[in-house]
Amino acid sequence: MQNELLIRAAFAARENAYTPYSHFKVGAALLAESGRVYTGCNIENAAYTPSNCAERTALFKAVSEGERHFEAIAIVAGKEGCTDFPITGPCGVCRQALYEFGGKKLRVILAKSETDYQEMTLGDLLPYGFGPQDLAP
Ligand code: THU
Image (tube, rainbow, N blue to C red):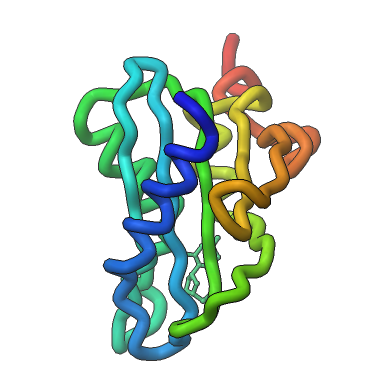
């Protein structure tokens, strides 16, 4: 799947972000090895702590549908109403959550637009990450 299509899906998911507290809207699109794309947005809560990031929304949707292996994730973020999107990296908790299933090789696409983006790996974003291999016998 082309990066552009994944970014487009992330922008569409961002439209559904529920952000009455931060007004910061995030969209993510996660490409599974099966070829299916799972999207997610951030979902905030009046009690703050139960809020969920876009990346984990997408990941948990996918895993709950039986997916276990992923190739890439596109992330778009910005203040409500913004038109000039900044490059925004995933928070530390989302890096760790993705590492469990994507590992070092997961391609992470941080996008300002469909054609203006930076691509890196999860290993770049989470060096020396702790994962399932660390618990292996
Ligand atoms: N947020 C995400 O959805 N993903 C990230 O990786 C960073 C932060 C959300 C959480 C909260 O709803 C808002 O952005 C402001 O922190």
